[in-house]
Image: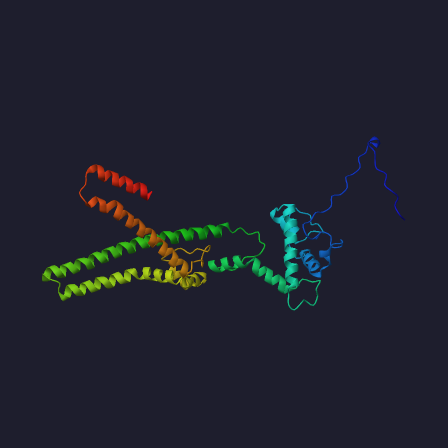
Length: 319
């Protein structure tokens, strides 16, 4: 039986006609209605990705929320974290497009095109959580990608206190070592002059003590030599910084604190050479200017007025 034409309600009837339902908006794919006539819905990869998002049977029930039978994974996350509805829609389309494109590029093609392949999900998870996995490896912890209601504030506070204590311990030890080196250099230097003054000339004993003093200096500058080596060969430092070996952490703990952001991003050798040459040119021009226009003219005997004029002129040129 066909339904006749609907007669619009008039204001005199005392009733108001309900407004027509607003159509669901979308950007690229009408994921809300897989039965609609749209070119993108014809692809089985798109239908497979959208169907995978609707599988929320293994997710826990959210408290104080009535589960909608049409709720998918993005709706569930939106309710859990309080995301805005339009943001959930945008992320849903983005995720479906990403998974569908990955399934289309899969080689060999999946045997069931209407079902999302597990390799696509594993690759997507690896890319999505790669930075987080690297961060966990950097901290020496296992990945905690799981929904949990536990409170980890106490663990985080304990770790922050431990990091602060280690930083304070390192600063105290650095001060003690600096004081120790000062005493060692002072004693070795005094022994050199003691041997020279007792003999009245530079004897073999005084020369031997000079060699001992230079050996101590060499031990003192070993860390700086290593830093210079890493500066000349930055790819070695980049490779070491990206490794999460505890032995490397223990060996470098003394020199600098571990950082996750920016590690392994040292400039190459060519850029380091350019940077060094730039500052050499800047300092050479500054010292040359200062010597010939500020210092050398003051050597010749001139009057006070000429001195003042030259200094002011040089300052104006340098500024």
